[in-house]
Amino acid sequence: MAIIEAYGLKKQFKSGKKVVEALCGVDLLVSQGQVFGLLGPNGAGKTTLLRILTTLLPPDAGDATVVGHSVTSSPEAVRKAIGYVSQQGGAENAATGRENLMLQAQLYGMNRAEARARVDELLAAFELEAVADRVVQTYSGGQRRRLDLAMGMVHRPALLFLDEPTVGLDPQSRAHVWDEVRRLHQQGTSVVITTHYLDEADALCQRIAIIDYGRIVAEDTPDALKRKIAGDVVRLILDKEHVIDAQELLRSQSFIREINQEHETLRLLVDQGEQALPMILRMIHDRGLVIRTVTLDRPSLDDVFLRQTGRSLRHDLN
Amino acid sequence: MKLLREIWIIFIHSLRVALRNPMTIIVGLLQPVTWLLLFAPLLKNLPATAAFSPEEAINIFTPGMLVMLAPITSLFSGIGLVVELRNGVLDRLRVTPVSRLAVVLGKALRDLVVLLLQGVLLVAVAWTMGLRIHLAGILVGLGLMMIVGLLMISCSYAFALILRNENAVASIANVLLLPLLLLSGLILPLELAPRWMQIAADFNPLAYTVEAMRALFTGRFDDTVILNGFLLTTALAVFSLFWATRSFRRALA
Image (cartoon, one colour):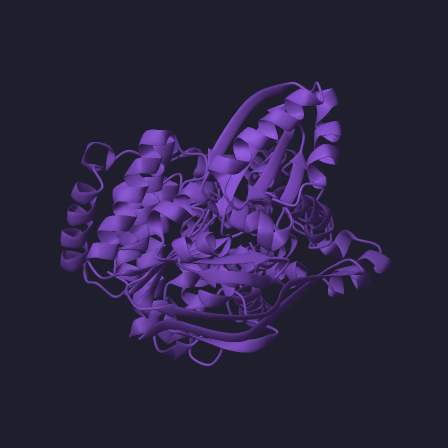
């Protein structure tokens, strides 16, 4: 069963005289119980899509059914059924963690006793008991993020939206968030995550949509997306002045299906990595060019992304 | 009722957080109290005119300071909202099923209670300086001040949600503040003003509030200016409240 069904979503923003097409006709189907990843560089339209699905922004065209209700005609019903944790979180700095959670619980219709019980439960589950009565201002990044997640789950939503949930977190906190998402998944909660971390999408999501320039350019399971790029990926890091020569040399070889260059790195897509690698090394060596590092990999989501958008996601981040 | 419950929840939560920092109350009080302490004494030594009797100086001056308190505190209340907009607090609230009006009104009530506390402190200071008026006059006067406060708070919220920038909100508030105050006759009665200033003051809603407040403080309870002041201020406050709510519904982060 689908928990999200979106079709033809369009959104434009005007800034001055310039019109930016943030979404140009997005269709999306997310099944119940899935962890679904929206992957794309900054400005691709991920957050706009999320804001439409969470009723924060009306679409210019199209509609979406979220947990059985239309975001355009019955946004109130959608709001009751979903949780949303934005990039900034949304906890009040001057209030304590407990006060933030209590308010959130009561806004979803719980009475004080119910709210108190639920808040205690969440404080324990997210290991926030020790800091519960301190103001959020004094929280560490990880504590803050745990509070944000707890606030998004106060009313046990059927569907939780997480917008870039691990940006700026230390590795330990990041792992904690991942565990939390997996726990939600086991409990049957549907989760939609936006991220520009490929490993995150790979590790957590059952399905991934790659979004770029306001369009979904690919959508499948992580494995299927990677399988579509048959073959192996060879990465060569060369001396800077040798990169262009090496690229020229390798471009003419028929066993190399694709070649991309980025700074000192050449990324080659080949059919049989084990056989291609010695040939490549020999050719480069014979030409007198210097290789610093070589890796041979199965295609990663980054390669999928590169194939779909013509750009490397990692590169985009720097 | 759902709306009243939500207003109450947001109000109580916001008030508890606001009162944790007593500076919230003190800062807004500084200006009117300074006027009372350092300006009102001068009035006692002015010659009497038809519009003004020195014995009543404090009774005439204090209502003006109450009206002044409202914009000085409340026109700036949108600044907090800009911060909440940026921190995602408002988005988080808008994703819950809570009524938009409840969020705006709940927060506005918090700011109004802070204003009321300031008003009471201001009257107490004036009392030590010789203010002697009927209790009912003070109570109704504080009520009128809160309606002005609601008007100013709502406008400030709307500025905040539309401009989304603290500095812009502060600039607008500062630009509006002085003409609003000086053209309301709150420091000296407008009867002393030249004709063109009186005409300009006719377009200043605060002028009517000051007149109503002054009538209340000098015991002219049957004066129609009181009703006029209440009606005009209330109408504008309700209108601006809906403006703020509409801006909240549409606000982008």
